[in-house]
Image (cartoon, rainbow, N blue to C red; front, side, top):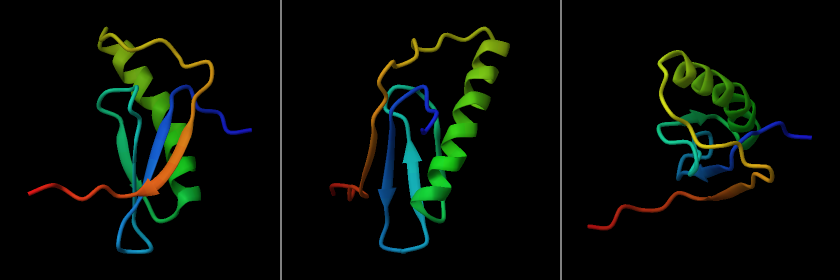
Length: 80
């Protein structure tokens, strides 16, 4: 079981060894990894650290998602 408290989006880039990730529910949370698995690992630990920092600074955070989703997609290109 993957232990995430919020939904996660992992985006593949043109470089096969570079992925980005973020949570659409947890403002300010994002990161990068070298694979989908690396992103999942980093996100699992990173979300907990991000929440701890928000609580330490007495900043608000959304309630935990009881059914978080993981989406893996290609990176969306910026529109010019």
